[in-house]
Amino acid sequence: MGVGIIGIGKYVPDKVLTNFDLEKLVDTSDEWIRTRTGIEERRIADDQTNTSDMAYEAAKQALEDAGLTGQDLDLILVATVTPDYGFPSVASLIQGKLQATKAAAMDISAACAGFIYGMVTAKQFIETNVYKNILVVGVEKLSKITNWEDRNTAVLFGDAASAAVIGKVSEGKGILSFELGSDGTKAKELFQDGPHIYMNGREVFKFAVRQMGDSSVNVVEKAGLAKEDIDHLIPHQANIRIMEAARERLELPEEKMIKTVHKYGNTSSSSIPLALCDAVESGRIKDNDLLVLVGFGGGLTWGALTLRWGK
Ligand code: ACO
Image (cartoon, rainbow, N blue to C red; front, top):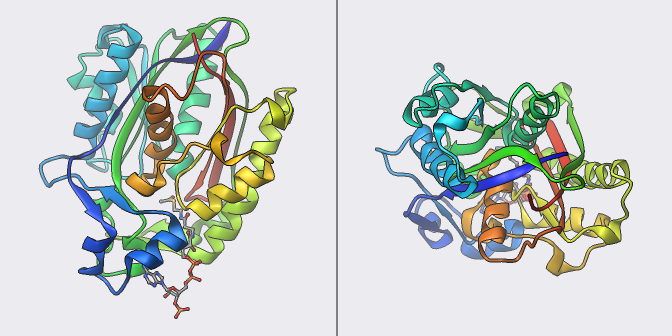
C-alpha cells in the first residue's frame, strides 16, 4: 500500500493584476519584474473573499475529484500564513462549511513549505491506519499582508487556494520519500510583524537556491532513484531564477519543470499544489509519472518529496 493524492482542486480569484497595473502603484516596470522574477501577472481576491472562502472552493473540487464528501474526511490540514483570524483555524472554518462532522481540523504554519509539511503529516496518519482520508489545503490571501507601497515585495505575491485529498493508493505509488527542515536562526530574513511582510530578498534568494537543490537531490536519493527517473519537477513558484537553479541542479531539461509563476506569482503555500493541479488538468502529468515537489519559505522552512502519480 502507498499513500498519495486521490483528488485535487484549486481556486484562483478572477481579478488579474498585471505588471503594468503595478507600474501605476510603485516605482517599477514590467521589464524589471519579468526579468528578475518571471512573473507577468497574479490574481487578487476581492474584499468579500477571505482565505477560508478560497480554501472551501478548492476543497470542494478536490473532494469531488476524489469521489468523496465532507463526511468521508477524518482530518483537515490547512497550510496558510494568512488565516481569516488569529483563531479559529481556517481548517475549522472549512470543516464547518464542508459539513465534515467526523474530521479533526488544524492549520499548519510553515509558510511556502506548508503544503509539503501537510502532505507528510497526512501520510503518517494514513500509514499508521489512524485515518483514511485527509484533506490538505494550501491557501493564501497574501494581498492582505502585502505592503502595496514597497516595490521589493508588492510585485511578488498573489492569492490562491489548492487542495488535495490524501489517501491510500496502490503499492509503489504515492509519496516515496520526503525531507522536512527548518533554520530558525534565519527567522528574521522573511517574516510578518504587524500588518506587512518583510523580506531580505537577497538572503532568501541565496538560501532558496541552495536548499531547493539540496533537498531535491536528497529525496531522489532517499527513494533509491536517479535524476533521470524524474518526469516532472514542481518547485515552489517564487522566482523563475530560483526554480531554474533547482532544475539545473537536477540536470533536467526545461520541459520537465512545471511553471506557473508567470501567471500566478508567488502564492506561498498554495504555489506547489496549484502548479500540480494545472499540470494534471492539462494532461501533462500522467499515471505513473515521477514527480519531485520542493519548497522553501518563512521560518526559514523547507520541504521536498517524491511522488509517483496515480491511484
Ligand atoms: N522594481 C524595480 N526595482 C526594484 C524592485 C522592483 N519591483 N524591487 C527591487 N528593486 C531594486 C532594488 O531596490 C535594488 O536597487 P538598488 O540596487 O538601487 O538598491 C535593485 O532593484 C536590485 O535589487 P536586488 O535585491 O539585488 O534584486 P534581485 O535581482 O535580487 O531581485 C528579488 C529581488 C526578486 C526579490 C529576489 O531577491 C528574490 O526573488 N528573492 C527571493 C524572494 C523569495 O523567493 N521570497 C520567498 C517568499 S516566500 C514566503 O514565505 C512568503
